[in-house]
Length: 358
Image 1 (cartoon, rainbow, N blue to C red):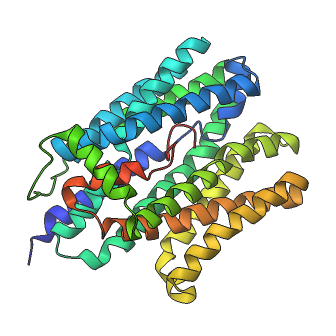
Image 2: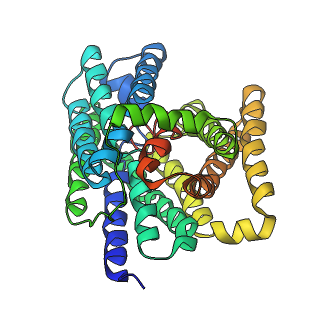
Image 3: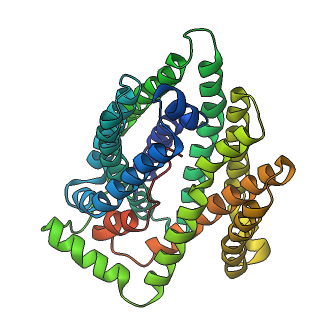
């Protein structure tokens, strides 16, 4: 049997990384930050977010191939450093052009992390000789992140509303603090032991293109990837939209954090019990329900927006997104080679991942 000690240590270190990067103090105040600190309107705010999504799209595959070639551990460390610098920059500047620069740095950081963390986690599970634990470990990793966000969202709102600094400087302080947490998330990664892989990518860009051909070729992997990417991306939008719903309902800014914490509490509970939910309703039915429910509630929000409907709808959309993610990730991991795992997982990740604007 393989020695389980590096496996257990890696899990603890990766969970610590996930906690620090997922604190997301800014998560519940990003819309007020742009409106008040940045002086933007909704049009310019979403142009900026659209540019960020474009940066992510362009960088996903190149950074994934770098992770598969040079090591997922070093890709994660680079991601933590770039993301930390980006958030600190957001907290220091008020220039619209410089916001684009910060978004580009953040996109580099997020794409260095996207796919690489799950690839490293899954290869660690394989190296431990416990491949059947993959889905449970992936779900627990996501649950740890949701738990950290559950703490970070209200803490960020409280800091933004406290009297340490007047608004909007207090909003900038929250972003700066998020950057510091991201920088510290690199520390546990230094002690991660990366599992030995039989083969690494020798020609990253050529192999990256080959990985995309594998991903897009008709078959089970293509169907799973399209399902994962489209439903997850539409569900991600709710992490922005719930803040606007809260503004429409004239809720105090401090309650944004409570709502964000509630969304992540729901996600944490669902993820810890993901195996139970799957066993109860079956894999196919679970994926079907979590794909249909967000669409139904988004349509409902287009015509019916009182808080009594809008806020529960946000919980349904986010819960569906979070519950299905580790299930699909495990199914995709089973179909891809280790040497291309980070590249392919990057290719199906959210256009904006679990940090930076979620």
